[in-house]
Image 1 (tube, rainbow, N blue to C red):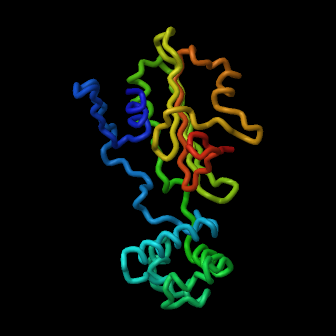
Image 2: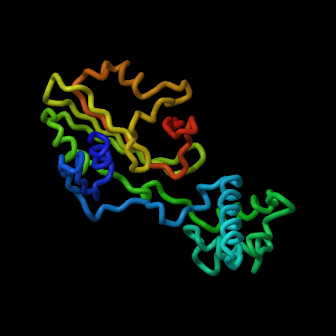
Image 3: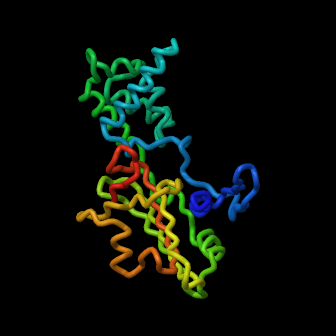
Length: 256
């Protein structure tokens, strides 16, 4: 139930009906049904890729076409799927720079592996033709929505605080961090912590290696005497196009 509520905290457009063994338990209505964010179906930016990432995507396309008997797609078709490269002029510029006009994706393979140098040249050409994505385009949860959700928890008057930081990380990738805080009216209530990455709520706190010293969010809260038994509510959400995880289970985000 708390996990469902956490998703409602992170997604203003979401309406949820919670049931337990078929019996309705709770309904959570959207605060903004028309809210928009960067979605998985949105074109990705070439600036979000390193060569190894692009090779994985190329390999997936080549394998899919081969296994399904499809016509092998061309490099131009591949390039056209990226944000900022839908223009015919830009596509031609990229292909002319790397000498792959009318070439199939298979032209990027050398023997049993990719021609890594050619993939690097292709990615560099794509980045030169496409503008980087501004952090604001990722989308934000927003103060109004979070204020409404926090009010539903029962918070002390005047205690709600909200901060948003839209920035570029060390790799030049867009990132939006949002934090909301409030004191709960019920002084015996335990701490309410809502965390998430890219609008997906976390079952456990994923921010366990923050900064250069690997300190966790829980440790930082403890330093400020906001332990589990303190009556506060805190939300931390990060939107980022290329999240790094410290474990295979993707339960711990590497954050700075």
